Length: 326
Image (cartoon, rainbow, N blue to C red; front, side, top):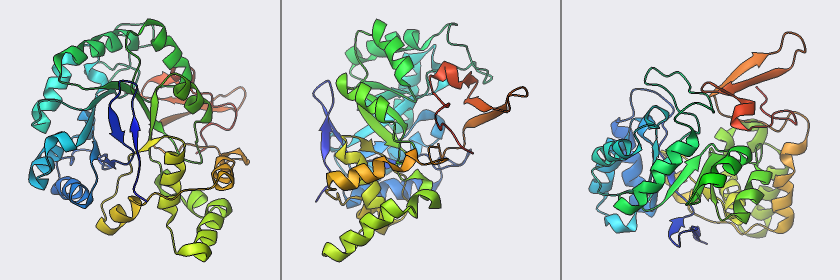
């Protein structure tokens, strides 16, 4: 069964499966490997590309789109506003369009709620530009035709509530880390009720053994093998997201795995529930990403922290009930 597409709150469709272009290293974003990956993805049938200015590979993505020969209107292209450009939104989008060699993107996301100065220092939530200020500037892009849809990334329920109080246009998408170790279920409920589509990055949990070898996931794979042929952990995890209406953008360099990932598996309610429960076991609820800052309170011994200059409290990430485990 092919992967579904989903309708956004502005009546545009977004392919439910995309190719994620964060390559996991700095300074080599325009590597020919990016071009090869995106060309291969487009040629085997992917129609959604997820990149960002600070991935450093928008030029490579644009080259791949031209080399693949797929009509532009058939491809959904997402890129993101870097935190250093919160005060110059229109100029930042034009920079990305110039890099990509495109006249428009299908989706432009505020990559993080926090703005950074040009030297990388975080601007605090009550200092300008706030993410509400930045969002107002992003709303103006819609009238230019250079961004068909706008959205956010790494926004918590708390910060979405703040944003929506002043927004004229609700975000079409909120892209967040999401997998069975960090299923974001309250955030999903909040966004679904308000017509905001979640996109999952790292939907395969970076293939951490604690997830891939988990008995609940392996049990689904084994039962499906007995019932009608082998399926992969990736197919189960990506389909678990899609069953909830969540878009997925896994990175994948291998051509055969790209093809495998395109197969949607219709999971039963019991199988979905089993995956939902994984994070509830002791020390299982966790992020698998490496952007966290660790801080241990000397008085209490409690492990806390934040990301890119904002604390978890400022980000709206409640880490007291499992939270991030390193």
